[in-house]
Image 1 (cartoon, rainbow, N blue to C red):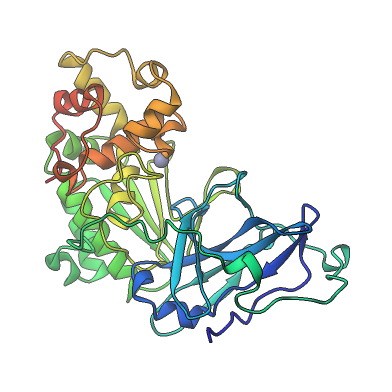
Image 2: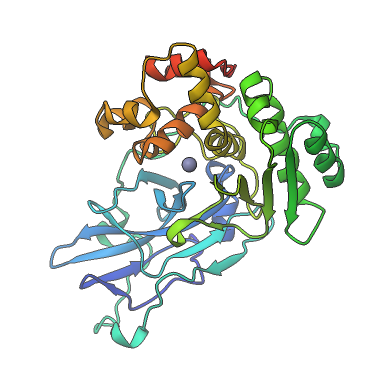
Length: 373
Ligand SMILES: [Zn+2]
């Protein structure tokens, strides 16, 4: 018998459909090897069509770096895990009562999201008072396609032991002595995870700085680049969107939430997937790509890059092309195309994976950005 999540809700109705909440306990899931690399779970509603009427099942889902549910997971009655890609608008819907929980080995720290307040009185309970248990009807029918991870087990957290051994103060001085970078600790603590996150970020910066253009970009401006480490699991970006990092070019400030554990770097970049990577080194590279974009494009054009601008390149192909050739997120706008391509190109497993399109390869080559291993 799989223990149930104590926060399972009864009586929710969404789009006129009842919501059945069968989520397994977070402590139980935290012990599952398949989720050992997962830091946070969110919820998603899976649309199901029953014999008499449609309904939703609330499931745990692994969020993407931008906090949207990306992979739904659930357990069958004997506790096996299954997973399937979330398809919002088609088979899945956003949960108006979304719950986000940390998956930690020791304990599960749950918190309710502040999104979308819900008035229980407006959503009457199921008038039969009936909520099926585990394995209720077609809810637990296998949906195949689970566990589609293709990354080889050759993964690391991407922290250089040299930096892992430094204190936060030492990391801060290292960055200001080796680049015009201010590391700002706004978490209110100087120990534990803050140091761990900072050491990981410094490792990525050190690796990227091996390209002269990146070293120039990180120290060549009068104003320093600022890296703010903030408390909690999220950073609020434009429009209230929650992410765990963002870059504001107006302030030259990269803000990173330190509340999440570091996840391992995949063996190769996620070209053609939702995102190039969700781990901290890849996200840091993405954000530093935003920082360096201007200098890289100017340098590439000086050396004969054949495009007018990143916007012109972005507009020269359809979004569907960029989604496949770089990542789904890269099709958002020219800036994200650049940042995602940069994260892929500099990824330690770039040469093990699918290559970027030639226009982007030549952009980085002409600007002298070193390719990842
Ligand atoms: Zn971005």
